[in-house]
Length: 461
Image (cartoon, rainbow, N blue to C red; front, side):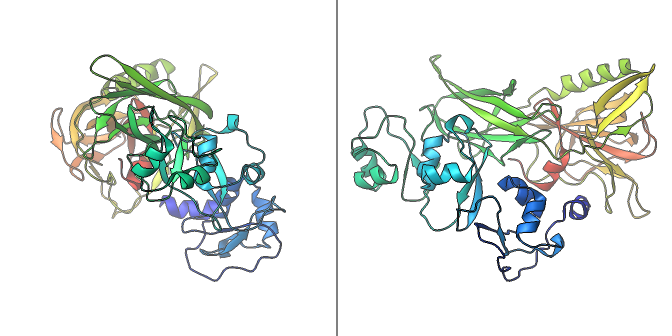
């Protein structure tokens, strides 16, 4: 349902292979990939949608297809094929040059004279996609380790390391410097990070308002991880492969911009090591059109919010879910309101604003059953009636992840009960502050309400 709406609104490209369209003007090109749309391509390359259409002589955006070569306007002196890449945790301006083997002159031209001070996690950098070697194996000399020792350990030679990394000579390697070498990438080569962090990365950049940030770190032995992202504490949980993961929701009301991400490693002897970088938080997928709702006494909203915050701020160490989350309602699905929609109401002639903290599923046909299903396995930690959400069930899915099912006519589960993904837990109703029967499906991650559709569309972690 959501994809069909996006197709109409954003002119999603038909995923039908076709021969590349002949270029009408000179300039670098981008090869259309599955899932692309012209609006997103224009945004990725920092050009206007109208200019992208004009330079490619496109009159019907729906006819653009996978495999087509699109000219990217604004680069008259650049040729070849372009792509974009996000800066990740541990990357630096210099290491990015070494990895992509782009000359600084070309990099500045492609990215409009970017400087190291503008280089931050989540920034989208334009890079050549073809015509030059790029490296993925990242490594870093330890204190007292020579470039020769590092080369031998990584099955290469000191002259290659010096040339790939534009060093002044074979003596030019410095402890902690991020270097690149030929060969396959290794999770053990987390150059640029303190020794306490074997590797660290953020999955699915950029970080977005209302989204879930997944930070995966492999710590040194015996190190306990913690950290902070945009002033919210990070809680790490062990994965099966020696890595640890923190899942943190980003408030939909947080202003876009730059925020600190700090990782801390604490050893049994009390010693700590930290690493911090600036992260770009961008606009999320929430709607921007405001919706007026029936008046509410603002005094009734805060207690309910505080009650849910208190429940959803507990980080249960056990992970109950396995794989992707499932739809909490039967097919066919009709979404009557999306996550993050701005809402307002008037009370005593004063305008009050808040945002829609979940996804509303309506009853759209006789085939659409009234049963509510658990989106993932977990333990029921709340059942009862509250003012705004009516009859509601809250399930603790573990690791700081909670799902909420609101406005129910009937609740079929009890506090302390363990439920499985897809199990019937209630019946759609119209209790609470509503105008008609529907299911309000809400998710909280790390004490923050997030867009539950992300969890229905991909697997965490």
